[in-house]
Amino acid sequence: MQRLGLIAVGNETHYIPSVNKRTFDAAAEFSHCQSKTSVLVYRFEFLPYFFYFRLIVACLTGTSGEWEVLEDNGLCLFKDIACFSYRQHSVALAVNKYSIQLQVFKPSNDSLTKEVILEVRDTIDRLLNDLTKTFHRKIMFTVGFQCSKQEVFSDLDGCFVAEIELTGKGNITCPRHQMKNHHILRESDLLGYWKPDAEIEKPVSVSTGDQFSQLYEEGLKKFHFKTFEKLTRVGWEALQIYFDTIFPKQLLIKIRTSAKQDKVKKIFRLSDDQCARLFPDDKSDPSSSSFDVTMMYQMLRNRNPSLPSPTKGWGRTPSENHITQTDDVERIRMYRNQVVHEPDATRKLNKKDLEKKGRDLAQAILRLSNGTLQSEIIKVMEHTK
Image 1 (tube, rainbow, N blue to C red):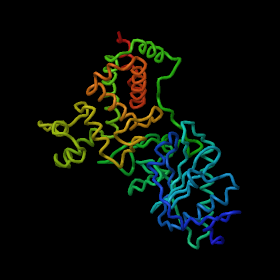
Image 2: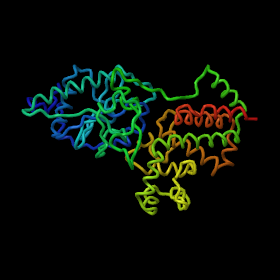
Image 3: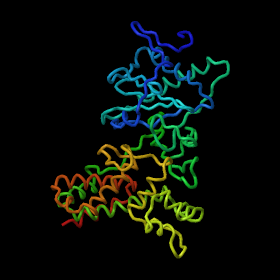
Image 4: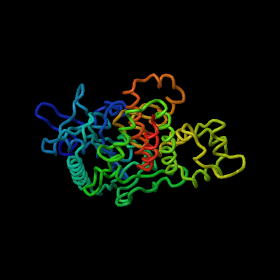
């Protein structure tokens, strides 16, 4: 077995991946991880399971001792995943029917280091290329990403996009989902950490030192419930901007003309009134301008698997450092509901807590609208009395 690369021989213990039957709940174990890369996917036309076992052995024996197995009530070695530590970063290697998947993360909110992540990728690229050469017929793989959920263990048929299809393209319509499941892929989100020349796009936020920040901070001094309520209306505009990138008008028309109303209502879990907005009585074209926050949220949430879920999942309050686009969709829905359904409780919040919510909402609006609603935020803050 050692000659075949299927056992890692140690001084005191040995490890045979093929006999490991321990299961791993990725959703539960990775839910606390606040800083993480997208998932790099090595997609195979044919993937013998023992090929993954050999890769894990190679990581244990062929990395000059720089990679160590993570420990958490025992070694983090499981049937379908192995977790390592390298230069203060954690590395997860998972396998499913068609692919080997790689993700780098940190349990804390500490920033990831691109240099380290590139070294991790170089190591796995080297080990995989060495392993494929040992077969009488070379096993071929393509490197890319899942276009939707970015989690190790994701195995969504028809959701793989090759790296070459994304490189140098910026923001593009997903080549796997151009009609009913249309959505946008952001090159910086997927490739940012994994390619030396790719940029990591920093989310738009309320920064300090510029004119906008000064006006915003001045408005916060007088921030109260009515200001927060007005800000949630700007949140509706931000959500509409994002919604239109996922459901452009042509797609809404396609949905209306290609599916029966009852079927659409069931798919997106819409109320009678909401469905009527998608299917106007006068047969006019539907428009997101007539959709409320709840309707847009329902349509975005219930069109999975094409759209990545928020960091904690749909319907859960995102943490302050969770700033993906769908995290901000959750924020806008959450704050709108607090104003509409819990106004008395929201009014009773102390000024510090209300300011914190206002700042969080403003940052979500800026990110989701790509900064285009900055002037609208200022208008709300300037009219605060």
